[in-house]
Length: 387
Ligand SMILES: C[S@@+](CC[C@H](N)C(=O)[O-])C[C@H]1O[C@@H](n2cnc3c(N)ncnc32)[C@H](O)[C@@H]1O
Ligand code: SF4
Image (tube, rainbow, N blue to C red; front, side, top):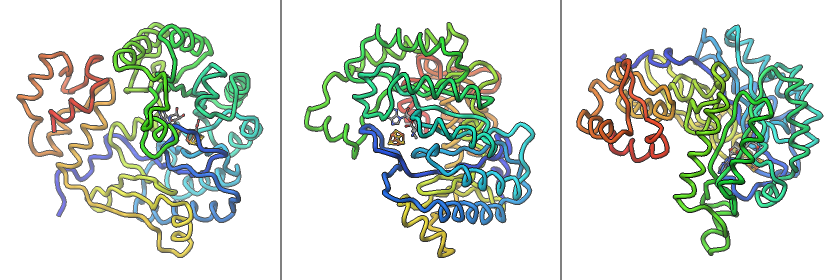
């Protein structure tokens, strides 16, 4: 039976996410699905990605592809030939949008800088560079394999080679003062950036930092108050530089927003391939949540055996409405209320909305509900009240 949410994804478009699960070393703060491998058989990985794209294309015929995103792990360690094969296959099975965005996440070491031109030749037109800090001591504390000079060289080459670039920084780090962050972010904003991802350091279970934190051996982390000050400085400087937040942690000049991430946050459809990749795919009137096996070995073996280890769950429209709200409230623009109501077959909880609006955490305008500047840092609490 088809229901009211049947073609809801069309509001936001269709994208492909490709997960590359390997890194040269594991950073102590990172809980992404990333692994250090002694040997990687690039031919096998290439064939597996191509086979997964072809399989998903049979289930999503006739789609217009708005974006491809190579995420990781460290996709800049991929063989450019693999990146090329993924893009060629995707263009073969779907129709690329005229302005398709093709992003690759890169680490700023010399190994990767030398590959930028080959990635560009393969069709990548946007790079997201993991600079993380503009301070050598901080980079050492974060366990990074590059220093600031190397990161700046990578940034310069990236801007020569790619039409669009973005830079990632982590703040609220150990021992970081408000003044230091003000200086560091001000410097980043002089680098000609049009897109910045600015993440507060989170301490995750199962990471080296998580283990050290548990035994009290991770000194100098900011208190909640100092974290809030750092957040305020971030908003202030980015607004002044013409890169306001369009999402909780993402800042861009108007028009430089990541089209790929907008597909997620506007709750469009996306095929996710590679270990641990998630997807949301509309098929025959059903919206499926998909998640691939996270172990690189298990994923590769299952694809090669033509039994891909991907779990699929059909989402009830009310679950989709919840996801739409969770994703959309991250955006400064907010969520279309009529779209929410169509999926949920009921409006948002009126009393909760009224209270949160009165408290200044939510704003309703032009048929949309959005978190205010005060509401965005406490999004999880808002969602608990609303759902
Ligand atoms: C998939 S990761 C890394 C991409 C690339 N491998 C790199 O390290 O630059 C994407 C981003 O998440 C951020 N990140 C990862 N773990 C984090 C943590 N525990 N706290 C804050 N930001 C984190 C980093 O800024 C990183 O650039
Ligand atoms: S932060 Fe990047 S390089 Fe470091 S382990 Fe995570 S994915 Fe790999």
